Length: 90
Image (tube, rainbow, N blue to C red; front, side, top):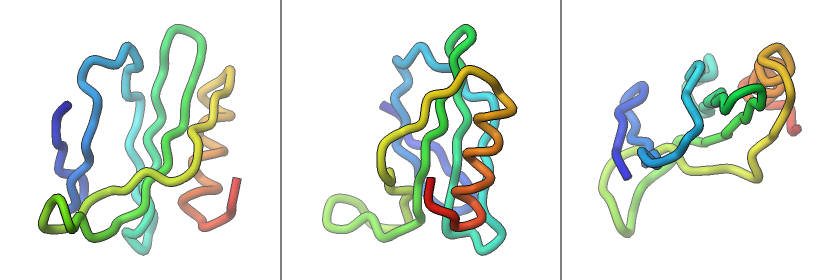
């Protein structure tokens, strides 16, 4: 596991995953984060919300939200990410 600073908040990422990060996007209000990952021809969208890391960690952290979405194209993954960033539930 590794911690990554994204827009002033920490993300706990699994460094051993075979998924490769294609893009990391932050909403305009800086409260939501979407990561687009790829494994071969499959794409995954991970959703996070900025929050307090207490009681384990101090500071701002990106907390996982809901299940991840799987899709077959980068265009579909970007559309799902955009919905999350715009505050539209997927």
